Image 1 (cartoon, rainbow, N blue to C red):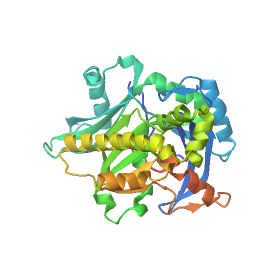
Image 2 (image 1 turned 120 degrees about the vertical axis):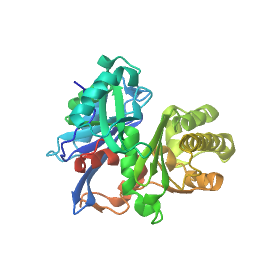
Image 3 (image 1 turned 180 degrees about the vertical axis):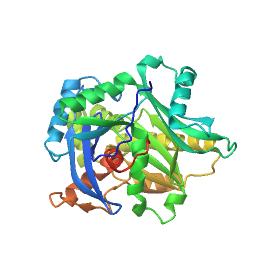
Image 4 (image 1 turned 60 degrees about the vertical axis):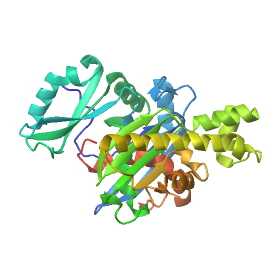
Length: 359
């Protein structure tokens, strides 16, 4: 039997993004198709608890999640989290259009050995029917996703230790794509019909998701993030890691830092984004990306959006998924806006409460 990565049962749950530097959580409600922020939380991750997007210390991560738990209404028990990194596989395969979900599952089980480059007893697999193949109407496009079962299980255990019940383990790049719908108001009116690149630049990982006509068509994880900027500050100015992190956010650095540290990092960041977009364009045959939405803690560095506009010539905005949302009375909008760009993945996970789709 295929071990499910996802759940189809709709239930209100908190989206929890377990990152290398912090854990972010968002709880959304929905009324007449409009989302409302009921709660959010951001807690720093304990050093050494995460490495290369994998949980190394379940108890330590559970302790951080316990702090998140105190900031989420007690009535909400279920959570959605996500996996990412080199051990996560997503690919579109082509199957007979007449097969039911049960028949698809059986067929994928038979063919899984040739589709997944890991022993099947070590992976969790799920799939989702997409649309009929344009080139061959007798075939249907099916999104197949797989992750190491160990990666899934440690997140389930960490959530359990933190007082949550894992309802969904998703894939980060698809959670990021899902949050795009919350940012359309920041873009021109035609955005939903255009090619939009979602770029989430975290501490150690950059996620790229390409959306065409509202559908995710390409994803890529890149081992690059704000940590490289922090370590440059640490190296140049002989600061501790914590002091370097603080200086990065506050801008409390010598005047020459712009040339010694910031400019080289901006060049690397630009190269990463350009390379990711170029790989998509090459594989898809498209001519260009129309818009870019950037998110993650690293985009708090002043001028990242302007850099991409100037160098790539693409309309770029910093994500604020809560821009058009109502807030619960207890939430401070100014505080929420400070964290907004970092809460995209968590928001995409929170949206799983309202939709039965897999991705």
